[in-house]
Image: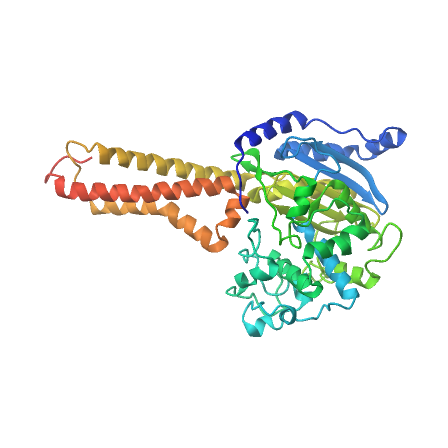
Length: 505
């Protein structure tokens, strides 16, 4: 994802975030609001505590029933400094997947698609794993993440440039990816599965995925402000999300993947996410009782991946995570997700009568556990249990400050070498091959690490998700390369100029 730093906007938004963090929009007046605050006071206190602990500038959450929110709160500011309200748009990350699965099941119910349809039959350009593998991948395999696409297949996702191709135009990025196993035999969570699903939907309907999901899901569920493409984001005024740059929230994650709504770039306000949760609590019926999902569709989506007592099963249904949490949430149906700068969470509670939804406008890849704890902890409190122990950000700090320290060292060494080139010592040191090799290894190390990261993830992923560590590593690699050159020049000079037996430097 392209990161567009906005120094003035970042400083202003950060200041506004601090000023507005303590502001709480007043709930509905009267005894009902007071009773709601009393029942959910522990939840409010926990969510605020986690928000402050992680430095999130803006957050919205709600407890939802089949008829809509039972309790909701919004705090802080968006990436432009405006107070967060129930209409403030956020991106939901992978919470988009149950939305996409719902849109696919509507096509299945209409007879326009079948769960056992071969993907290659709809997408001739789908050649993942070679003809033998690709020809056996079905729609069901994509939905339940058993197509064999590995988690590391990130080359086709998170593309926010205006000229990025549609989903079908990105399938070539999977051609050289090695499958984890035959279709249906190996589970691996990969957003690429849902990118391919979006391409299938577009092939079947003959129109953009965003248009289909608006008609099939957003409208029936009452998600009037939901976002599914760049135009929708612009219309709703989606502000930049925040990334933690050296520990300081900065509103620099600005962009939407126009072809990514099925896997991570669906979004909307708290009202929209709560409406989707209520729709799911009604088991796929509109507020007026009209059936959108059949009982069989709902059962398949929520039960197919359920973990059995023997531990078998993937824990992933058709678009939903099913179970896999500690008691009393072992029967919860849920999903969490993140897009650069944003995070979303949705839990359908085991009682079947309540849901919890959370939106945040900051997320760093290396802080994922700490960022998501607010949802898991709040869900446990709502279920009558204690929240988990506090999750820290030690890995994030180690990576960011480690790479920053390396960059500083490489810059200092390069500057020192440049000074010696410009102002050589009166008596050159005695040449040593070992010393020259050591400088070459030291200088090349950051570049080798950077090349390894790019080889595994590509450049786009670290740029979008950990820009501070990425920037530090690029600086370290550049300074290291300069150091190798400068030390090479010095070694060449001194090899011809140093007197035999002269003093060492």
